[in-house]
Length: 480
Ligand SMILES: Nc1ncnc2c1ncn2[C@@H]1O[C@H](COP(=O)(O)OP(=O)(O)OP(=O)(O)O)[C@@H](O)[C@H]1O
Ligand SMILES: [Mg+2]
Image 1 (cartoon, protein in one colour):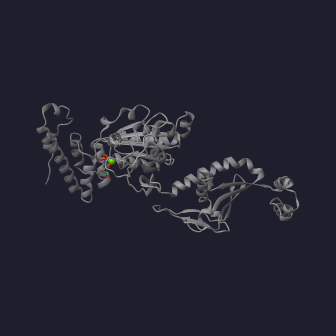
Image 2 (cartoon, rainbow, N blue to C red):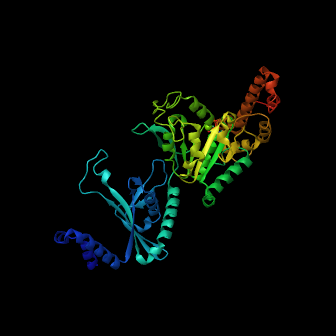
Image 3 (spheres, rainbow, N blue to C red):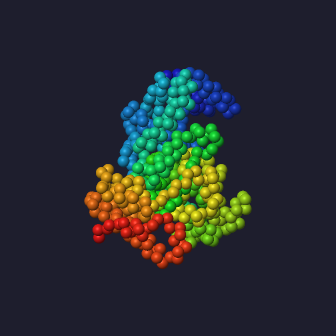
């Protein structure tokens, strides 16, 4: 060991050596000493720095998460909890060492944090900008062949640990950075919706569930087929039918973060691009009310954030922002958006889901919906019998109320949104009798409204009416 220390000091270039030798020999001797040192050293070392140049090193975060699974072997650990997290995350403390066994090989990790001696005063705080962090893995040279397999194991275990302790985030593009560019702002995502609580046709829900599960399990299939690992969902239907609730339920089901893109807040295709490249893997990007958004973008003068003027305004000038294909880059365009949904950019990252929602699918540019762009189109419709059962279960519990079957039959004839029924059930969730009466009142009100509307409409416009709402209104026995 002493010999090793001696050689190390020599390899580092002792002062004596430095001063005596001509410079052309110094490098040569240094290399020779290093190779001698390597020869006697039984270990190899792998360094995983926090930054790769100026970019964060994703492997560093994965190792950090993996450390949480082996802290039992450490004497000093760090405990952290995110703002909305219920569980604390563990990792080894700075400059702590731990050793784990992998296939009979000892893997020794050290978390190095070095602060420079000369403390630099910066606006971020003393020395903050200069701190270097890295993980160091030491393993016996003879086990070197296990490295790839071990690192794959580290990444996998790290991801599992991170998912088990981390809570979901909701990102929205409403904040600006210092240059006035739109950035994602992060919020804790705590929506309680699940695929079991969203009321919709059971067959449709089963198809959505199967599609989502198959998507996350098919990374290898996508890779072999040469396809980007992404999926597009198009949710359409009247207001209050559960489109946003379904998006939240999808995020919860997959444990994916949600990016709520407010397109009208984005000024240019270039800004859109910079926002979208920041979207992390295993996430859902949702653009709500896509029909309104696109018509807003089309009517917007170049470079303006939106018609209401919520954003900062000034464009960057059509000439400076003209895209490579002569496309007007000074504004966000549908083709700019589609470039991300199925162009080259879409292949950046994996396990990405994009969701568009709309109340008016008929108003949309068909380019958005063409085959292959949106993989699954889901119609969120008025609340029918089976969906009503889900709502009753959500608010009143598993016990089936005697009136449910009759109300379910009526709902097959009257178009009422799940949101309206959910409102009534919520109000009387502790009294099923009152809840059923409130539901009947909502349905009757809806039937009467439709009936009144039909009376003032000419015959032609009634031709498309799907249900006979007047008779439905008569069927309702409402206790006022
Ligand atoms: N299918 C549903 N299942 C369960 N709850 C629902 C459903 N639809 C609506 N709700 C209830 O109504 C509220 C509003 O629904 P949601 O925002 O999901 O509707 P939406 O279709 O997105 O409406 P909009 O088109 O106006 O955006 C939800 O918070 C939820 O309580
Ligand atoms: Mg919505």
